Amino acid sequence: MDKRQKQVMDSLVRVQAFLDAHPATGTLTYTHAREMLDGVVDRLRSYAGAQLTGRSQSRAELRRQRDQIALLVAQHIRPIVTIARAQIEPTSDVGLPEGLKMPRLPLGPTKMLAVCDSMIEAARPHQAVFVESGLPAEFLAQFVAARNALVQLMGGRATQVSTQVAARTGLRVQLTRGRRAVDRLDAIVRASYRRDETVLATWAQAKRVQLLPGTGRAGEGAGEGAGQVADAAAEATSNIAGEGRVLPQAA
Image 1: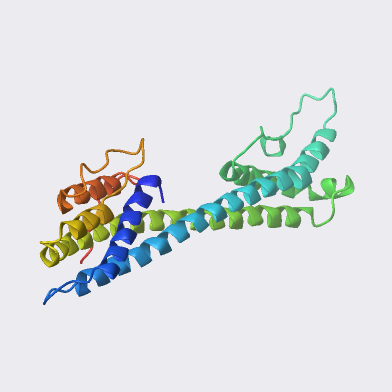
Image 2 (image 1 turned 30 degrees about the vertical axis):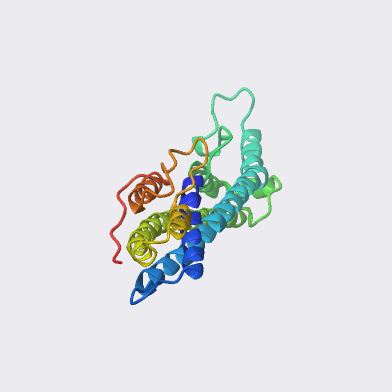
């Protein structure tokens, strides 16, 4: 959740507190709009938590990928390349097969997988030579297992990235729904407290999106109604992470 999103969410929480302190009067009721607002706030907290967790776990998966790539280079690729080079006489015109050459480092996980696959296939016909030169009899099986471990780590990070994307979309949708709930509540509050300027000023302040310096334009005044608050919230929701149209959501 970025700063602008948090500011909109904070305004929704202030609205909840206002409604608790100032019940609707007469035959008016907050019930339906309040249920909508409460559901939005609950979902926003859930999405924000998922986004934070996903980001943290994604970074951890990335570190594990780097560690696995380092292991592949140190324990599998480099020993194979070293032994392959030793088989070639210094005066020979024969060069190393492409699949047995040391790759240019560093490499990302996708390119590392390609290097591993190429080297495993290039080394397979010469297993006996590598074993005679000191590698364990199951060195290719160990290489394949280490390569597959990298694939699993890549899948884990992709899952965490997907979680962040889903949470980001959820935040955008729920912030828009929250704005709609405030619009509905605004009419009820104004009707209930039309003769109480103090309460109406408190309401305007509660629903106002308190933009921080450098994040955009704050609302013009505490008593100008739901329109400007809605505009500020709409601006906040339209600029959250990622581009694209807000998905429609039934009230």
